[in-house]
Image 1 (cartoon, chains in turn brown, yellow):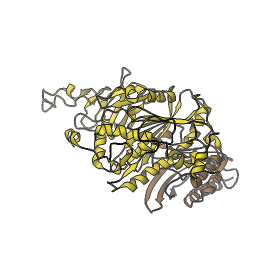
Image 2 (cartoon, helix red, strand yellow):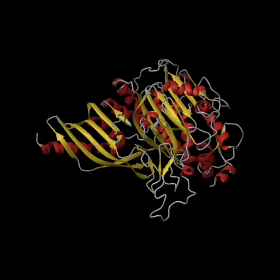
Image 3 (cartoon, chains in turn cyan, purple):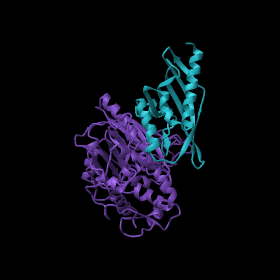
Image 4 (cartoon, one colour):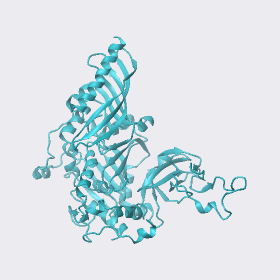
Length: 157
Length: 414
């Protein structure tokens, strides 16, 4: 497998991921992860302090499915969407099975009444399974630059 | 506003002497907010400052707030805990800017005044002037300019402080039942698993009431009911201290409990949702008493939460009339094994800004705040479970909310 092919696969995964969220196809969101995955939303200060708690902490694809089920059927919140902008993706390391990458993002939150705000900025720290197409996340750490979350977080970042 | 001005001010008028009517103006009136800062947060109340593990070593400090007033908590060289105003005695500059750190002394960046870890003024830059010119007059005495000290007290690893000389000691303030409720949960050295801040678009009191509101839990938080984590029909109750301000509610875990009251009411709590990965609620009875949920509040702004194995301290920080920061400190214990830590982390999904059973609390206060603006003549009603603020062996009640207002009105004066 050549480097360029890995880069294209990683680029496609990360672009498709934010597309899925921003276009409200959340039922497809868990499919971006392998079955035994980790997905964690934390803050820079917690991450740097080595604190393990995540605002969202998923240790299996099933836990991601449950997030979507709860969002659709249980949780109550004011309708809103995100617009993610992901910066250039850096691939830190790649072998025949796993690529490690990081990227920066911002997520704008658009409320149903049109109110827009910068909801989150941060880094994606990814470990990606590159053994088959499409690539999938083994681990996605969402490290938020701020430890403050406005009102609530229900749609994944 | 001068202290004298605040002393003579009157709060928002109440429609009656009863505890069941709350005028909406208390959430929107700027003068009321100022009164609260003076008479509640700086009044004869105890506020949570930090965990004692955060200031384990001499020189450790935590910069925090009581209400909106900046304070610093330190561990001094003798091992004692001190708290004082985070405000230089000279020109009022903020002394400790970072949230946490370790220092030998506290030095103001503005003019270099220094204080020891007990808040005593130890140095004034150029006190004798420069080249015998300027400097402080001979009458200036450093002893007159120590930082205003708070009284501090530690309970089960929680550090509290008060500006008040007249507040009763902490355990008297809380009452024996609430002290017991704290000791039950924090029965061994704690370990911080993480922290985050949820910014609430509402007056601080709307969140304070929310945490005392056992009525809403199974109605607003559908997730909780669906997965049978907290049902009104489970055995439980509310314990309220004599002042009304502090409380804890408990529920025992009983999946067999009758859910007929939901079916009868036809509430939207009925559901067939199932969890793909139930590990988010898989829990152990770590206290051996069957209590799966204990929400404990300390007036004015602290909550100690046990929801199954998810333990957290929440601190309510008013940030102006219509904004509140809610600090979450997620806890485990020093003796937890890896499996227990993993269990707590997974259950951590239940609470916090993204919590399955708490995220709605982040938006509902904002909805209330928006709805009650410029409704100065109207009041809300809290009559579930009666008229007073007594302990009750059931949770379909607003007794603890009435207790909050009993304590609040006693402090504000009306």
